[in-house]
Length: 268
Image (cartoon, rainbow, N blue to C red; front, side, top):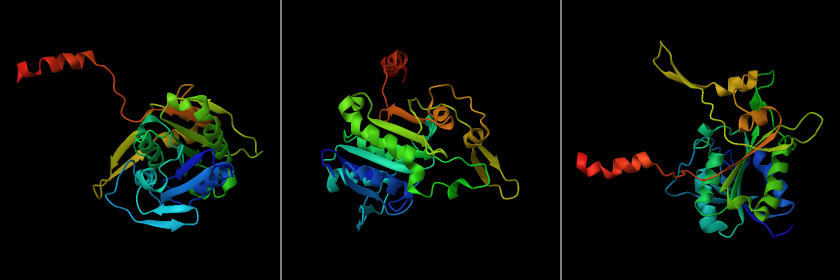
């Protein structure tokens, strides 16, 4: 195992998840990997942060009794402060579209790394549903994650030297499941889709609201308005999506807001 590349590996599905093991095994072949991942499933917690966390030893490294963002902070501050790269994943379930970036624990672990000026890659696997087998019962073997692990290791090996992270602070990688014939998916550079289809419906009997993300229904039916070059279209059509992103929140110059600021004291 070469120590030329050192990696902090984390996720949000938990340190014992199959997707995490798939990435760990793939990276361990050529890098010095330190696992710093949640002890339990922490999916969809975003950048939630704890005030204090317990850390226990695990056969792969360290299990953090906290969130993915906790893992990044504890890892980079104390457990492995000199790593070259943070990799988060592999999440079982895609993290596609601009609206999920702040929700995803996987992506949030990568975003947290950006504030330490450490490049990061968030890695997720699209597991389609809508057939006879529930999506939760799919992707149960590390081999099912091979499109994701191949893309992630390729980007880790070559991205730093190629200057990718001089422009992007982190990469959001989403891969389709491995094809039945074992052929690997090509890689496409994308932008996050802006499609948003969240609804809230009220149950007249108990008054509760049910929140529903209609994007998944669209993905299953193929009813996708996403244009070419977006992350969701790439993955649904069988390509690995790689979106180069910066940590929130980007700042732009707004002349209209400048004008309001200048007249503020005159109007109050």
